[in-house]
Image 1 (tube, rainbow, N blue to C red):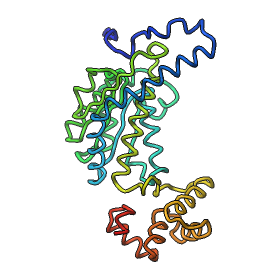
Image 2: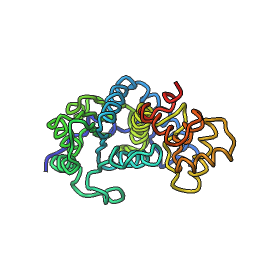
Image 3: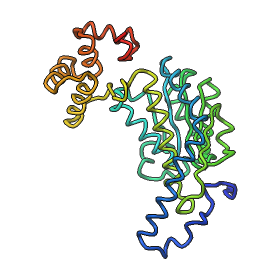
Image 4: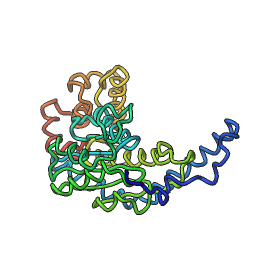
Length: 299
């Protein structure tokens, strides 16, 4: 078996500030962990210039019928799957628009699949199954920055002309060499040595939040700061949908409820019907002509 050298990875270093965790009180450990977590947002802030072009590329991919595909192993893979899954109800998109791939497949969400992350070929195969095209963008996620599964996927993505990006928590990461648009977030050594589900995972979640949310804003899924394409799939979301209509139009609850159902529970359509004083058919036409942007229907 080939020996893997982790000595140069920041994510594997011991944190000099957290020695003696097993001798601390619960309060002492809490305070120290919180202090370490405070470093994460600042580390992400330093890399905003690297994140911006990926969002621009993602908006471009969406506008051309492409997909955003996350791929990673372990915590990194799980975070990608989580972000992809949450785009469906939040922004009303199809499940195949933002996709999360995890080394080892669905089983790996809860149980480690031995050897899956070490396979270059598995990364390639998973993208082939999706019939990857040059309209898609592939974002490889690996805290260590060296996961073979991710590298294999990025290499395949480049071979078909897809846009490639990477997200790691080490500087000079290996996966950065295989991506057109690399992000490297240095959060420093973990609170618990090598446990990248902690600060590294938090940093990855923050960046994925940025990429998916701001990309969706860029294709008209948001009006002001309201998620107007939310899907009302349960009682709480039905009430949230009505509230969004009220907030967007300054109407009362009864009016919001009536338009919500008149619009076949399409929040964005209901808002345009109210704001433009249009029937459902006319409002739909306005939205099509405005490429889904509510504000453009008002001009």
